[in-house]
Length: 212
Length: 295
Image 1 (cartoon, one colour):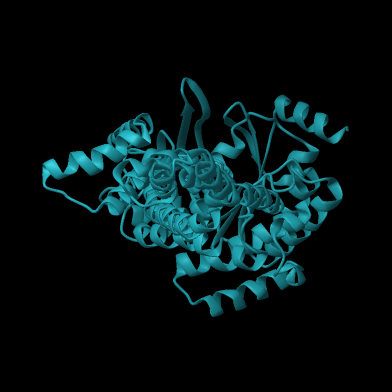
Image 2 (spheres, each protein chain N blue to C red):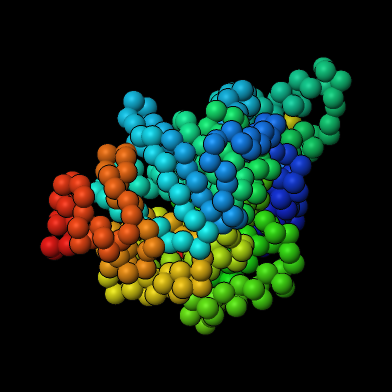
């Protein structure tokens, strides 16, 4: 019985992982862009970016999902459920990680920026070679932690019928009425990813603390 | 993990090439049209490598840190700037490469003239920074790059030379400051004295005509300070134009050609170091020298 569920649930887990990868792949670069905008010296740009970030962080992930899936088609933009899920989680990821990354960028000591400036290295190169590499390194453990959270948040997209892990478990439950067992099994599968993930992020934090 | 790193790295790197961002940077000079104002001062510019500061004023809020200071550094000359804390020595030095933007006055460096009243173009600023190397009290090496990359990267980005060429030159310079064997290490694994010598090599790699030293040994214990001072003495002996803010009185007396004593944002007196050390004109200078020499 449980053996019959496993292939279906693993398929759902695969979808959850793909969705996580899509959300992070789009969301982390977005987070970096927003972080750079929020740290800009141009006041107008900074205000707009910080406003967007606060809006993004203030909107629950489930609401963001509904806006993209049900709201955007009204504006003529229709995506598949999977793509809608990816876009909405990417937006949430971007908003949250931008604050994490901004903290990392601002942890780069002022003296290094002065030295870079005194050497005649321009702003863009200073960002590219000095600030961003170090800032991301500082932010990496927190970003890994957030990645685990977003993996768990993919369970929300069962509400728009994406066949991910929770969706699969739910449909098995509705056929067999063994909700407890199948949801417990799904929970174990989430944990099988998140627990090693947390351990990895702890390791990374430990390793990175050696250099910078 | 590698793919995650790649994902978070590649896109911003690409984007960074297209979009102009400003991080919260040290105050930069606004970029606008260049205005060279030769002949604005009645004193003509000397040969390349010289610094001439005219009536420089720098305020932080209401506090006047540098108050109407004029100072020359001739090509090949070593000028030491000494004085009590808060005298404005470092601020004055930082005005030379416009890390601090003076509120009024004229900075004339290596034949490029900057008037405080006129905005400086990014191009002129880049030219100025190429002519002037700076060494900081806190070294300010880039901790995520190896020693070799610390010295090579600025050459690649500022001079536009190839990585191979830059690294060869970096090795030569590291050898010169006695740290060739540290090339593959990270700065964090080097002592303070070694880090400061690396910082000197990093600045020299860009071929500056003038070197500014802002209390280069103040963060070092005395023994490590000596190895930095030795490099600086060598540099002076080779004829590098240098302006050095320092609390190292022996260095100031032995190595400098010209001594400037500052207090309260102004120059108390200046001239031959031996003369000032043996027979200062100003009572304030005498008081300061007694305090630092009698310890």
